[in-house]
Structure formats: C-alpha cells, structure tokens
Image (cartoon, rainbow, N blue to C red):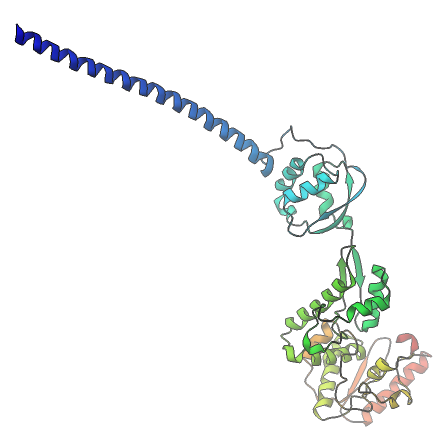
Length: 379
C-alpha cells in the first residue's frame, strides 16, 4: 500500500505542472494574438494616413478638403520666386502674398504638371490675389507676367552708350554708372583688358529683375563676352587683340559676308607693317558727322590714329558682335590689302590688291554719294 500511494502522489504532481504550463502557453498565445491584432490596426491606420499625405503633396488626386479659390483673382500683387525654389517654396510664397487659398492646393497643381513646373524660373511676377491654384500656376508660366527690365545694346557702340542706356533703365546718371564701372575687378573684367571696358561689354538684349544694380548689368555683359570668346577657343592672352580686330570689323563692315574679308585685309596689312588707315579709329578719338574724317582729324597725334601709326589701336574701339568676333578668329584667306564700301545703303564692298583699283573704287563711292546727295544719313 505504501508503495501504491507514493506512486500516485508523484503522478499527480507532474500532471499539475503540465497543466500549469499549458495554461501559461494559452495565455501567451492569447496576448500575442491581441498584440498582433492591435499592430495590424495601427499599421493600417499608418498606411492610410501616409497615403493621404502623399496624395496631398504628389498630386495623386485632388483632396476636396484642401482650400482653393474658384476664380482668376483680383487686384495686383508682386511675388518673388527665388533661385532654387521648389514647389513647396513657391506655394508658401504665393500663400503669404494672398495669391492662393492654401499651399496644399498649389502643391497639388504643381506636382500634377511636372513638365511645365520645370519651366518656372526665378524672378519677379505680377500676380492677382485670390487665384485658383490652377490659374496661379498658369500665371507663373506666362512670360508676360514677369516684372523685369529689358535692355538692348546694338553692335558697334562704345562704353558711353552702355552707360547711358543703363542709366536710363535704372535711374542712375550716366556719370554714376561710369564711376561704378571703374571698379573693373568687381565686374570680372579679365586682367588682359588692363582695366579698360571698351569692347568687353557684349552687345545683346538682356533682361534683369527690377531691383538690378548697374554693377550686375555690367558684370553680366562682361561675362557674356568671355563666354563668346571661349566659344571660339580664344586663348586668354589673345582676347584683347581679337576683340580689337573684331571692333574694327564691326565698324567697317556693313554686311556679314564682308566681315571675314575685311578681317583678312586687316591681317594682311598687319603682316607687312602697313598702316590700317581706318577712319573709324580716328573717329573714336574725334567723333564727327559723316563717314569720313578730314585732314585735321587725321593729324591728331594719338595711338588710335591709324593714319599716323602702324599696327592696331591700343584697345577695341567699339563692342563687336558675334559675327565680327568669329571673323577676327577666322579671317578670310586672300591677298587683298584694300577695301572700299562703294554703296553705303546696301553695304556693297569692293576689294583690291594695289592702289590703282581702290582709287577707282573710291570714285564709285563718290558717284554714289553724289547721286544720293549725302552719306551723312548713312552713318
């Protein structure tokens, strides 16, 4: 009997421990299931919130809850889009200016038109207040809404013409612009120009923001000239010489086809130390009416007087355009040492290798002038 009860007590203790373990496992499975269920709910909620957030910023469908105006707006306000602004930056700028009802409305529109959004550039814009985001986007893509200053300088002008044009546009005086231009280091003028801006202000049409300062305008023109010289692989040590030759071509040629021809004449004369004898260089130091100089002008003692000194003038005499720069880099290969423009209206030019022929060409020019009464109007 004793042995029986001892065996029974042992079996009961093991069963109890086994039952307790089973209960603990069941409890753990229960809590694991609850935690997993809660986790799934949280993940689902997170995914839903994340998707709605992405849709609001990625244009994945307009959210009806996003505030937006209905119309094209009213009144006028100026906004500034900064360089490097992203869509969200533009949206905040427009919102703070009262242009749009909410940044989110513009962001949706901006991101729904990815190709067009890349075309929005930095600058000042005239907008209207209370615009529908779609219309605000359209306004930023319309060039006529830009608030900008535009300046056009034709080829063949001297620095004084630039100073006056900049003054007219900015409210400065020409003298004030000229004083600003004296700090050529600040303008990025290369050392080879030796502090002289003549010829280094590229003639073109430029657009600037309305708050532009003369120094920025001048600097832009200088950098444009450098880019043009780089385009034609002009070495730094040759830049001033090429611009000087190009300026002579610009003043002497009337037609693009004559530019490389005249550049060739210049090179041929320089090669044999023959005076250039260009009226344009004398007029640079003694401006006067008409296309020719007189004997008194040609007696002025100046390195710019190519009737008195051989070689090139010390600096360019005007701002050459791209066609003249290209001609100076790639002059025509010929034997001509003379040229005469025989028709000041069409620019027809005759070339010669000896003195007799150009004298005959001068007679043709005199006949044209006599028939047309005066060449002064053609200057």
